[in-house]
Image (cartoon, rainbow, N blue to C red):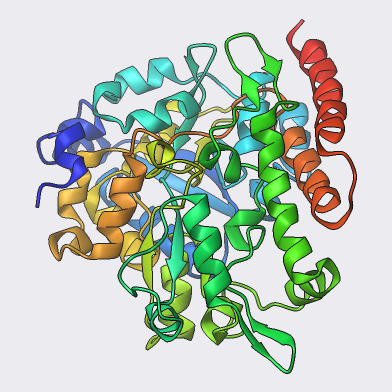
Length: 441
């Protein structure tokens, strides 16, 4: 079967050229008697991710011995979410590179001048935009200038339980493609005992569905016009999302749903309702495969693209992942960019991919991945979704972080109250547009 990765790219296998200009042997020879340059690195994840970061640092220092990486674990998005990074920038004592999962905040800071541009450094290392997944290029640039370097690409997927499908009389090999199909199947998958729901078919606003960025793309709604810097929330397409979510609350009792959600186990725990059979379908990131491997290794499940309002919108999602950024005043900008770029080698991606099924940004590296060579169906679904024409980035603007916060708060009002949805969206739109005007004047 020809996978979409061949259709879109058809690149040669990843090579030393990708890592830019100089070979590893030349690096080693040139650095033998030279003083090693320090690359100061802040990262934001602990656990397995921290283990992987430490391993990757060792690999980088071995292949690029002119550099030594001083790494620091800084929670809350590598200091982006708690203000530590901005404090460092203001003091002039900054890391050369940070890695964060808070993409919206990172992009907003790019727009506000908190990061160094890296186009010159990308040219030095031989970075080729024509070989990058087109869906991530907009994330790299603000106003045509490169500021961020995506570490990886994560997709959100529909996870479903074929055993529960079969029990409910549904085809266990056929997931829903449209919202209408999702709703119909969700209703059939509900299980009640003694008049109480003991299993939901689907709840739109749990797991990845709780993110403000997820459903607009599936409904064909665009909350921001990047060409004119205009917030466009108060429109029927956006209102339809919250009307749809409200319909689930009304169907199953808002207070009971609120109680169920507040008591549900986290994704990385054996008490997650999908693992417990309390939810038959859920939308969550590709990394949930690792949670299931750890906490429910024998659980039958499949993955598919997230249902969309219409079939022409089906197949894609709003992409997520981690990004590298280079704070204003970084002393070793080239070293930081080399370090970020190194993550795209297949040998570096492979262990991460086997755990999380996260993808790099260069499709020609996929052929070196173990799961790709094994034609793992879940990884192949991730690749197809990542390269689907309907996939792309969430709103990229100076106010994306505020937009996320305000829409998340608004969602709960829409779900659990009878407030006017369009009026509420208009109120947020007006407030955000004023902030856009302030930041872009």
